[in-house]
Length: 277
Image (cartoon, rainbow, N blue to C red):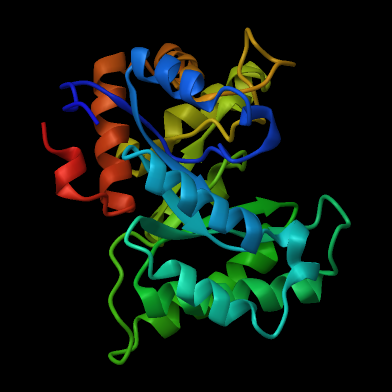
């Protein structure tokens, strides 16, 4: 991997193992690098894709992996899943447990099964002293209750002390949720939806954001930003998300790049050998 430039971006959430990238991933990463995107966090959504994320991280120095079972795939949680994820999480390029959480928008898995899988994976994150990548749709109240209990447990003297707790991926909530999230040590992940959500709602959210708790993501191949909406998303479009934030907040792009990339490095404890110029 080349030395990092003074100003660069990190895509903190992209599913690069998925089918849409099967034929041209090297070209996708080359295009992104030309746009200044120099690092990628690739979260799994089940055991198979968690392994695939690790395989990518072994092939590409700029790719880091997260392992976890997404709430929509909670029906795949089995008695052996915890031990399998524990083994995967010991890989040196695994930087988080995720993508995990609760999703009541789609009826893919019963809520109680989602909760059980989430709680187990939060326990693993505490054991491994890794941040979590959280998915939340129509479920903030229940997720908040579970996270409160987890945070209390992780403050126990017998539990390893975490730095950054994790990130709420593709955040679209309101001011109260934002305040709770950042006050409890979590980061906000902003994705392409910010380019096409109603302007008034988006502007009020951006202006409330504490910049030291923001990271950028594409959620590739999903959530493609304007003007490419409807096409495959890819890390190349991180600057489009940043441009929208900049236009709504008057924060210069270099400041956004430096701050959000520093946040990503801190959140995921990315190695100094990668982040040094």
